[in-house]
Length: 187
Image 1 (tube, rainbow, N blue to C red):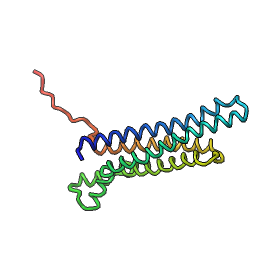
Image 2: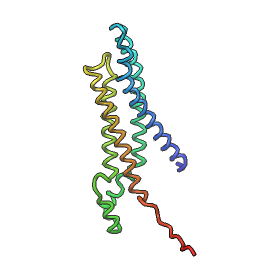
Image 3: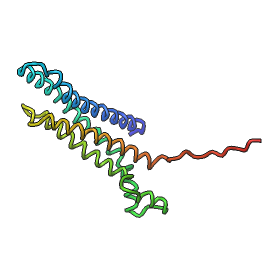
Image 4: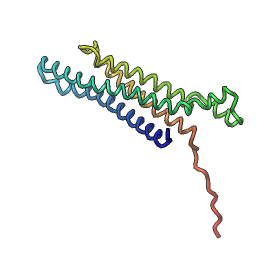
């Protein structure tokens, strides 16, 4: 496949991943914090009706976001796996060419993007499972608001892990200091 087309697909997948995450986090925040306050003054039967209708609408957002996140996450993992684990694989195969390369490869675990990516993926799958559990079935599960709060916190941690993965991967590719350009003497 043409490299331009492939890069466009990767870019579009990343955009959809961010949009689906935003819908899931924003929807969870709205459903958990805004809806209960908005329906507070209604009678019980109206409150339950509005809450059920909001849950039914949120179900569509969760399912759509979950499917998009799974697909785009797989595309992103496919694209970036070499960047996450390439150095470690070269070390295992004995292909490290210099002591400097070996030292870079043997860095602390916190500076290995593969670990961060795996944590992001695992936590992302857990948050999707919790979100789907909360909207599946005829009635909300017991303690659904508590579960939503936990899931919101986990979603935010998953976003942090994604950001950290990206940062660590860039740190391995980009120089940390700008090259110095010699300045000719004046005079």
